[in-house]
Image (cartoon, rainbow, N blue to C red; front, side, top):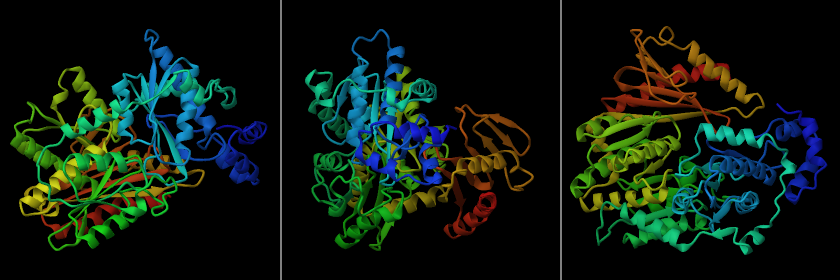
Amino acid sequence: MTDYKREYEHWKKQKLEDKDLVNELNSLKDDTSIRHNFRDELSFGTAGIRAKLGVGPKRLNIWVIRRATYGLAMWINETYPLVQHKSVSISYDSRIKSRLFAEEAARILIDHGIHVYIYKQIMPTPLCSWAVRFHKSQAGIMITASHNPKEYNGYKVYDWHGCQLTDEPAARVYEIMKTRDYFDIKPEHTFEDGLKKRLISYISTDCLNEYYKYIDSLSLNHSKTRFAKIVYTPLNGTGLVPVTKVFKNAGFSEVYVVKEQEEPDGTFPTCPQPNPENPDALKLMNKYLLEKKYDIALATDPDCDRVAVSVLDKDKKVRTFSGNEIGVLLFDYIVRRRMANETLPRDPMMVKTIVSTNMVFPIARRFGIQVKEVLTGFKYIGEQIHLLEKNKQANRFIFGFEESIGFLTGTKVRDKDAVNASLLLAEMCDEYIKMGFTMADRMEDLYKLYGYTATVTDSYEFKTMDGMERMKKIMEYFRNKYDFSSLTDLHAKLDCLTGIKKHADGYPEKYDLPKSNVLAFYFPDGIKVSIRPSGTEPKLKVYYYIVAKNKKDLKPLFATYKKKFDSVVKRMS
């Protein structure tokens, strides 16, 4: 913990280049508000940095961006000393100050002899991963706070194969960052000078065109006639151009874009919480789906790496799918389509996160697909693709997903890709219409085949200054005291910090997973409850996976298991 008063005074002595921050700094009068901005500094982890915009080391601003980029630049130079032409590819979304932060990062990189490739306009997160691989860069930077409220922005880093930076290099970048004061890092070049001296290059249309060709190649049904009518919203983010382009390329001519959310706008005027997992963010999309009687509605989040889906069911009512349901629908569709196309590889593999639905297991067993479980975070799915690639088996990967509406079917992007997923969902909807049923009908068929499931995520916010400490104590309680004696129907308990799954009979089963602060509780009939603190926000998340033979039993079963965990969190909060 820093001496916040000393840090506050240090910042007050500087000539701040950002007028917004000068005004904010002058407005901080009381001790509490000063502590919020200056008590600590933002850490740099595998998800990079994500925080509210503002002044001080606990907020995101150009000095935090400069210091993070300094750490990254030094790490690149010490990690790749023999590479003559080092480069970083940069992308940014529609959020407030995203372009500014991207340019500041570029200025620091070129000062350290690292060439910068940067998009001229906003681009989705997956196109950062793509650009890294296209340019053979040593790293990538994506300026985004994904689905967070408008007050936030973030700094996400990719490694040389387009996957999010893993724990060890992230720790090293942070170690280097901490050796320098924020105001000692001063760019020598302006962004415009960097362009003139060819130290910075705008990413070419060739890169984009190759991406679109690649997405088109992932299509599973090249039908010349499309029946599906689509409502689409980019939620004022980056998805408008790429998503509508791939729809057009695939022959979908009837696409209605939600006008109120069409243009990029970092203030997100119609959805203060631009998270497509949040029903409020989908209100306009679902309204137009119902009014127009279209077949499917899709919403991509501001950085277009995740996608939500609604359809009209047979009764012409809106049916919004959960992330787990979308994952199951896509997995089922991909396997059956690729079997029909005779493109299913030998020893196919799908990858899912540990908190995502187990409903894929019976589907996988039926079709001979290997399911690989990884920790929460799409970087672990990207890591599995990289491991397959190293063994010259990348073609085995057919699908990766996480319950928080992130999906991927190809191997040339190493992060979730809503452009890719949106195309496949539109194709699936179109195919089912031609066969005389809806995606809602197919989901019901799958439930009848494999058992009814419900997946619910409870999120508990800890916004007070001791919030992180309170979350830590709750996790310690669940880890050390909530066990077989407290839960009489508990079958097994997995602690991802130790990698040990303890069974009721005392047998310790070893799990080959990286260490992570995640707990999973296993109950009869495949019911599972997982708990973890968020990696980017002061939130504790509890994931319920409920299984029942009859649909009517899901709600009472969920209520039973929710009570077991909700009561503990609330009591200790």
